[in-house]
Amino acid sequence: MGGFCLPSVLLVLFTIGMSSAHSCKPQMVCPFGWESWGGSCYKLLEETMTWQEGRLKCQEMGGEMVAPSSLEENNYLLSKTIGNCILINCNDLEIEGQWVCTPDNGGYMNWNAYEPNGGTRENCTVLVPSWSGKWNDVLCSKICHVICKGEEVKLKQWRLLASCLIGHTLREIPTSNVRACATECHYDARCRSFNVHHFGSGERICQLNSRTRYEADHTQFVKSKKPFTCIYGER
Ligand code: GN1
Ligand code: CA
Ligand code: CA
Image (cartoon, rainbow, N blue to C red; front, side):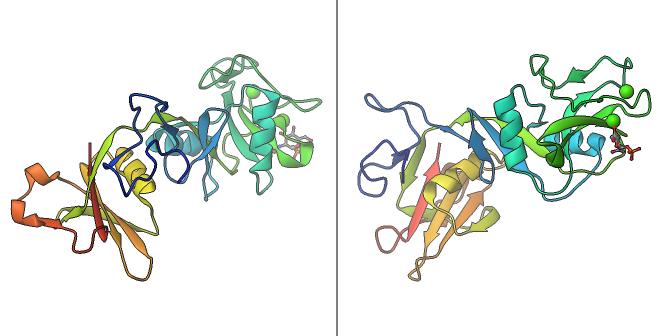
């Protein structure tokens, strides 16, 4: 449970991800399923796709297709790699030979020897694992892996109560802990509160709710039978 400010999240008052009076910095987190590296968050997408599709997909997920700004970051991407190319968010579509990267990566480039060489035919960029991560300009229709990059965010304060809100589930996620559930809720614009159900088997389920207890019928806010079989969280 590293990262919690209070001695035990389930024993004392129920607040997590907080910056409390002393000894607690605001906790920066990546969304569930994204990996934290160098103060940013990264996600390797499962499917391969074109450069344009990769840009859109990453934006839909609240990030940008990655354009590394250092050799360290380039090597990090290389270490994530499966397959034979990763799309890089740099292009010379507008003006041939004038490479533009998004978001601005400070002008970092890592072209392989004799690249870029494709003239007006090759206007998109890939990182080539078999070239130790060096870049190649390629056709924008080339199908490659995509890594999205996003910002770490402050985990907001959550009030936790030994209850559950019934009947307003947006979606359920198995095998989750309270913090992961809070993070998941944070990243779902529709999520207003969450429940974590603890079952006898040790299994936990994270339920994202479309309402808080104030917006629901009070009979739907049910006290946990044993102390922590159900935990409800709201901001
Ligand atoms: C590939 O397939 P070929 O050899 O014509 C590559 C070029 C590289 C070149 C380097 C679509 O071209 O971008 O510059 O190898 N084309 C694609 O040898 O990946
Ligand atoms: Ca070009
Ligand atoms: Ca090329």
